[in-house]
Length: 85
Picture (cartoon, rainbow, N blue to C red):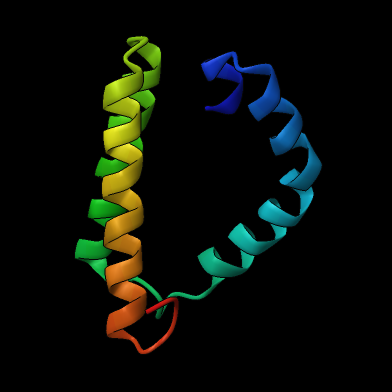
């Protein structure tokens, strides 16, 4: 997605932490108790919306999709008693 955005600053930033991100993502995926079926579907819909917005060249929709995904994620973390307040 970062490469599709074609923003050189984002590409360099992403390159600086992609290995750590891959490792963390692998650990999250291995934790089958982290997300239920509905949460997995919501995650898939959020990713699809973001990729679609980037592919369409619609930065406003990409920002909205990202905010919605982050807000949902923060709500889930807060409900589990973790994450920022």
